[in-house]
Length: 414
Image 1: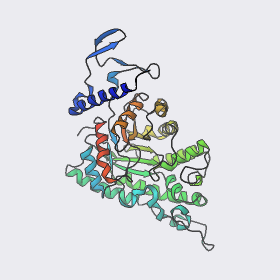
Image 2 (image 1 turned 30 degrees about the horizontal axis):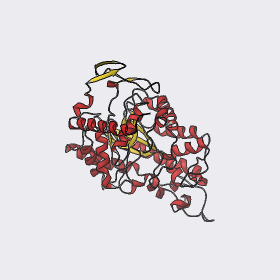
Image 3 (image 1 turned 45 degrees about the horizontal axis):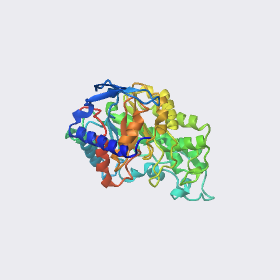
Image 4 (image 1 turned 45 degrees about the vertical axis):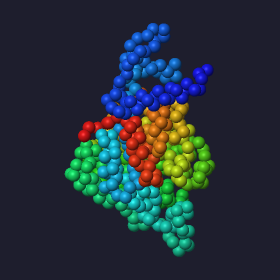
């Protein structure tokens, strides 16, 4: 058995090598010296194999790339869209393929700002809903639900991005990212179960109107749509595990009101995805929620998300030039078992994976999670935080961005 003190010594070697690489980023591929192969010494080269003893296929040293590119999931705790655009682009040069407006202000609480679109007697009691009076009609029409306003804020933010781009503060090859929940997530997160089937088609019509305005008024070659699928994923987990409750909230909050659940979620998602023209980049944030800084349900591994990503990509991903999927990685998951389902991920050449393995004040752990992922997933991937940053203390943002920059190579050219 190896002496435990050796792990500390080897860790210090790794740290010194990393510090040497950081002095000059061109050193990332530098590798030399003597290589021990059995009993024969030879000059080390990038053709040398890293051997996993049958736990994973052996891989050449030059096939272990640094992750490339950073995804900003959506919300950022800054004062304005302009602040998000300028800070992100300056802190993450050549890392961003798309940039969100940070979902600032009233949008920082995911789907919560949509509650005022619905009659108050239909809102979940957890969020301040009221009892339906005996004089209130149970019949709802399109006028009962207010427009979403997602189109208004997206178009306003895009105009701000264009102004900053014209000033040279936002690169021209970085798209404007509009992060949207699925209509199902809005309904599931805000509306009591007995009203969901009545209100969902009404809200969905308003949502489609907003989406069509976004794709019609923003240049498609300059636009990315990301679907934030929190309640969708949670409903799938409750269905798969047969759970009655989550650690923090009763199960009725998260259980879908239709069956089969996966088919219903996919059908609803594909229906809105087909409204997005192929020239628009499209992403999918597969989310386990961030309720009081904890997941609503802790993932066992990535198997549910890989299955969902494969299903989404096969039904709608092939239409678009660029498609990405974001999957969260809890801070304590550095084990290969968590990442093992990635062996079954089937994305085409236009598909890209971002792993949400960057955690605040944990650069060492971020490197460890990257290595664990690379031992399983042999394609290049980018990095992100586990979820949006809207509930992160603002003083931690600089450190998070610095970790994202440090652990990645550029993915785009200025």
